[in-house]
Length: 390
Image (cartoon, rainbow, N blue to C red):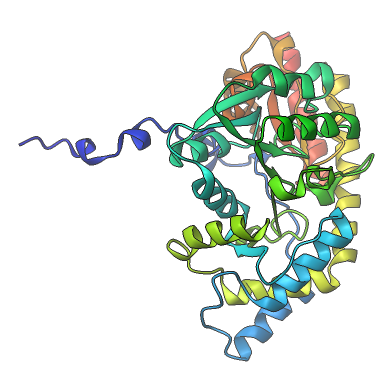
């Protein structure tokens, strides 16, 4: 009998790519004095009043399971927040589900609606887990190209061009990680009309909405015919600096929420009650903290975009998120080689664009969720490295 244990592994898992971010940061972890512009995590600690709510929860002995859908108090706050800030109305009793981060919300949404072989349209470049999560749901990913010519905005024309028979779901992330791309109102309205025409479900990840610097954030679920075919995803990691709490949510019509809840109850059961109590406080009293962090990111964005362009790394101005996505082709290096050499020679970490899809080649992701002074120093090092390559 063979000793090769890989024979026990499912075919679709064998074919699953490793995360390009994690592989790269294993290299980073082995080095000293590295300035990281790579991690998609706020450098701010969760505001004190939110942490204090969690401490009170523990003092009160709140250590038990909650409803599979989550605490009704939190679901009411989510419903009110989404209505107030996104113009979307959901019944907290049967149209809101609290998840273990947006990643879990994405997973259960896809697993709830995808039959084997169903096709899912998704932006490219996009967050590293999108395509693998589609694969884990036994779906087939179909990339939609976004590019620097249009500042990585999502274009209706490209959505239509990518569509093919069998596309059941359109998965979008606006504002987008890693590009900071958004979609103009007219484009989003056209995409919505196309989704209705082709009878597609839209899964809309809007976790970076609070980090919008210019223009308005628009949810695709607000357009005619979209509320009934949209699963709205959001979470606390970015806007409230709560990555480690693992708290997110999905809002959708009741039948879709019920389907997601079935998958959720057999996998996660429920999110941590302590995190949920903290989430209630974040939504009730966290607006000022969100505004202060957004202001800090905005200042950093202006710095990195200006410096990249001065250095010769052409970079569009991201309207949102805490990522810049400069073009590094002027160095003559591909994105992986650029990132590895920059790390080895100047101790600055940025993620190769190819970690986010094939259309990310020639670019790197720079997270400016790092202290201002560190960004200044990192830009000096990047300039030195680019000058060596020219």
